[in-house]
Length: 143
Ligand SMILES: CC(C)(COP(=O)(O)OP(=O)(O)OC[C@H]1O[C@@H](n2cnc3c(N)ncnc32)[C@H](O)[C@@H]1OP(=O)(O)O)[C@@H](O)C(=O)NCCC(=O)NCCS
Image (tube, rainbow, N blue to C red; front, side, top):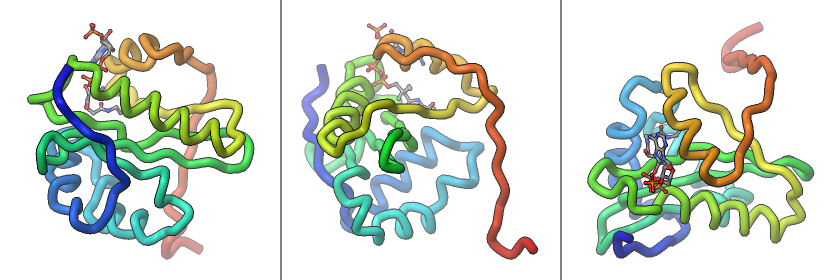
């Protein structure tokens, strides 16, 4: 397994996270620098947005959310250079532990259809496919 340490995200990690997300989510405009900054400003997220570092390099990230009952995982990413070394698994398990300590009983996540290959990653961690339709709306500026 690669040598890495898990630390909470802070602004000093901004450039590293941006580089990681550009590599891991090249086609996803939602992973914008603005989203990194906005999320990091929310105190409620301070323990639920964390990264993996190899020396000073940001090599992994995950965000979790908690609505009081169910937890959600977002922004699961590992640098290509560090994949298949259980780093992603370690980040998911850490997120589950942090959510569990908040009273969370169930954890979910979404995978884009174009990225369906990663089902195997989550399945290796005990996640099962749930039949549902996911919908969204950009409410900024809409009436
Ligand atoms: C998905 C991702 C986070 C996995 O990180 P990782 O550190 O390489 O994963 P791990 O080493 O912990 O993998 C553990 C197991 O999961 C499975 N797995 C990992 N990546 C997989 C993939 N791309 N496809 C299918 N199974 C995978 C394997 O069984 C693996 O065990 P093995 O290496 O002994 O075969 C990483 O590939 C990534 O960042 N991808 C791009 C971003 C992305 O798609 N994120 C998910 C958004 S929903």
